[in-house]
Image (cartoon, rainbow, N blue to C red; front, side):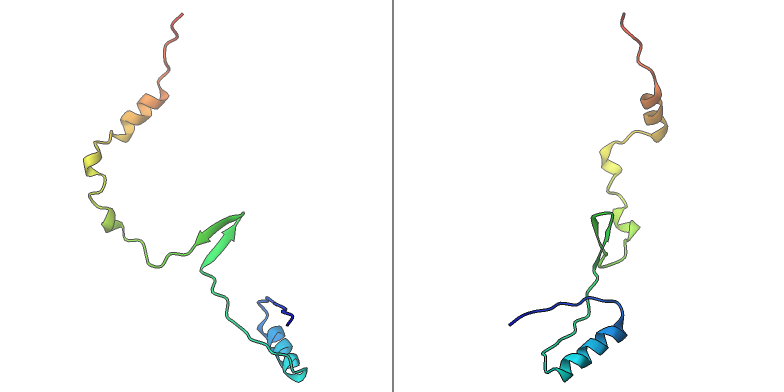
Length: 84
């Protein structure tokens, strides 16, 4: 048995093809595409199953002994003295 797969967003065209298949006595089936992901510039983006809750992250960074952002910026932008 040969198989032909047609994909289209035009529902009217797909219904017309399905009706033509009935007239020609060809087995056909239509499935709704589950778009649980999207591809952007070759990267597959999977849709979340639930909303993000910020309160779940509360307290997760408290024990890491992180420095203040202003101190990190000063360290990053200070020039190291040359040892010549």
